[in-house]
Length: 207
Length: 82
Image 1 (cartoon, helix red, strand yellow):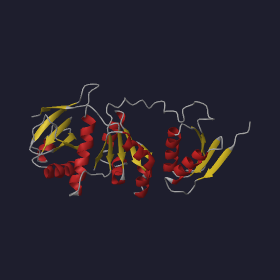
Image 2 (spheres, rainbow over the protein chains, first blue to last red):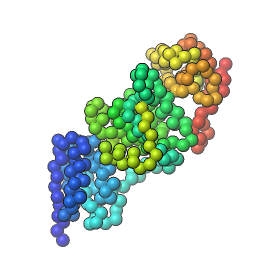
Image 3 (cartoon, rainbow over the protein chains, first blue to last red):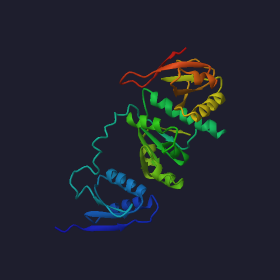
């Protein structure tokens, strides 16, 4: 049996273009496997997440530098394997809450920026002591600064992650601030995922 | 030992944070816990070796010893430190 493979070259394309291409190709179908070549780490992360979302089996062949080839086998032809196996030693506690918080700034509110950042630091510390933690924190715009090396809130975000909170930073925002390689907690996400999470249920915007 | 220091104002707490950090101490600015009395909303958590003398010098109003939460719980508790 011949496997029809469709090849896409998404090198040099800005995030989220590679995911859009993959989504379109999968919707069109007509192949047994979709191979996508990317060279941007944020796009790679997003494609892996998209693969899991689309229930594809995903294999990766790393290339030179940041270049990598991701092979997606759609569920219809790809057996019943989970698309991306969870990391074996990642066993966070089940989150106790259902709230999704959108942190769209590294501070809370307008006015004095120092006070705004002070309030956000205090808020994140307070979350670590809460009986019920959020399900997910979505970081956008300068909110991504909270999750990078040198952030005063890094330790608290790590504590929250250890309590089962999913921390996700907007890839476009990290790239905009040139902070992609400094992300020190959580994962990278894209607008599709963020919109999906915000529409899931109880979400709050902080910042 | 980990101590919590309260200050008369947020500005004083921020100033003390910078001062103490400059001396190499590990400092975290946090909202004043519910069980701690203070006139201001923010305070400092500081790991000290000197029983809190440096914190008094930084303008601290009150000092509290930090008790870590028991396993499975997440909220610290505090008792007055003299």
